[in-house]
Length: 257
Ligand SMILES: C[S@@+](CC[C@H](N)C(=O)[O-])C[C@H]1O[C@@H](n2cnc3c(N)ncnc32)[C@H](O)[C@@H]1O
Picture 1: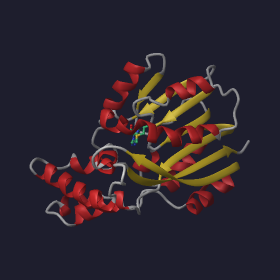
Picture 2: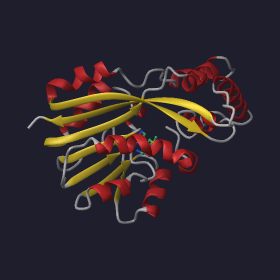
Picture 3: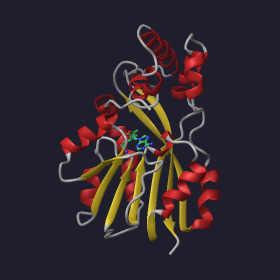
């Protein structure tokens, strides 16, 4: 996968933080010994973990050297490890395995989720949030741009149209392995500022993997084509703001004792 641009990603830090906080608020643990933030990115969730569980040993795991450089600079007191969560597993079972907006980057959830749950201590919690906005224009415009340009044969093989399953998929996958399981969705009515902000938002996450596979001048042509589509799909309101509804899936699972 291409590397991340923390500055572009954090342009919408407030909108991206809200579901992370909503997930954290639902984890019913008072004093965990170990907390792992899987796909911790720029480490920007570290303050909320340190505030909620000051006594816990916190470890951030991410594969991006750019994101980890930012994380280590901003939070030198936190341990971070560079690893792929397809294969990374903790030395000891953890009390809280938390992952915000990261696991949709990997396929094979039917294997990955049970394997990750196995790394949680009996009675411990796995808490996951993933975007499930892939049927919205923000994401279908990516597909249209890929399919209707000269880059189609190069980008289509890496296009994952439905990286996240339905709530029922995860319930069926995890129900027999858990002592408690809560799955829910929220569609946030995001109100964004600036010119074509939906394009800016998606450029910080899903779009970048495709841009990074193209050389100039195709890279700019691809981005311009996407921007034009998404601008039409999300016209500004009278006050200049742009409404960007965004659906997210939450999974809170307690490992059976
Ligand atoms: C959208 S960012 C989320 C960052 C952070 N959790 C947050 O909520 O701000 C997704 C992160 O997942 C990481 N990631 C994606 N695939 C990964 C993998 N296979 N192993 C480890 N990290 C991965 C990326 O490097 C990126 O930092």
